[in-house]
Amino acid sequence: MAHEIVPAAEEILDQAFPVLDHGFVRLVDYCGGDQRIVQAARVSYGAGTKSYREDRGLIHYLYRNLHTSPFEQVLLTFHAKMPIFVARQWVRHRTARLNEISGRYSVMKDEFYRPRGDVIAPQAQDNKQGRSAQGFSEDQQHEIEEALAREQGRSYQAYEELLSKDVARELARINLPLSTYTEWYWQIDLHNLFHFLALRLDSHAQYEIRAYAEVLIDLVRRVCPLATEAFEEHRLGGIRFSRSEFAALQALLEEAAITPGQLQKTAKGAGLADRDVERFVEKVQRGTMR
Image (cartoon, rainbow, N blue to C red; front, side, top):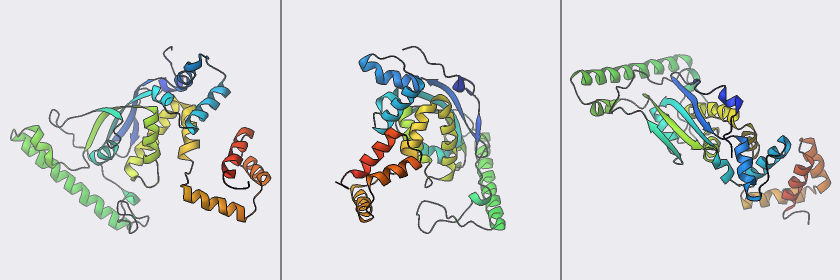
């Protein structure tokens, strides 16, 4: 299998895309793209590269039917800079390889994340881990910004004082806040990267890590546009039903006396291709209209 060069990806290699106030994401390297996925999938029966339409259809088929191993053939390496609290959420995705800057060896920079404007909001009453959609007033937001800045400044000053007294860097750093910026090289295969993006692009994800996910998916699209399209179609934009939820949906359709012809008409009106229309009707008919 020849090394795959993706021109759109080559154009943005090592280019820093800003995130938050001091952060960024850079695509450092990639191994494979859409062609690597289809070649890996077809190797079992020895078929070569097909047309763009056939490649697109195969990638959608693979993703829709959870054939994940061909997507694992693609590797992407990023250089990212983010606040420590974002990094601690990010690192929960353990199917990647990373190397992070160390405060034991390096003096940490005087760079802290400071949320601004309506990003500063009260605790949500219906969500123990999130912010309320109802924000503070502008004056309150400004007061909170200043309070955060003061504390960050005091923390870094104390850090510098400890370093000036020749306290070991590994000890001097321990009181630095979670808003301190860190950075790392992060390598992950496409299958697991899509899983990361599905979780971190969700509206329930914290705003700050969601901001990184939004940049990441744009970079992935440059490397694997067809695979990213399939991910957005079948997972990011899709909804899964539990068995009980699907039974409720089927009961609703039966009660409304929806016919296969009506389902087909609705699906075509939504822009589904003929083959997708048939699949849609078949899925809905499981347990209904028999």
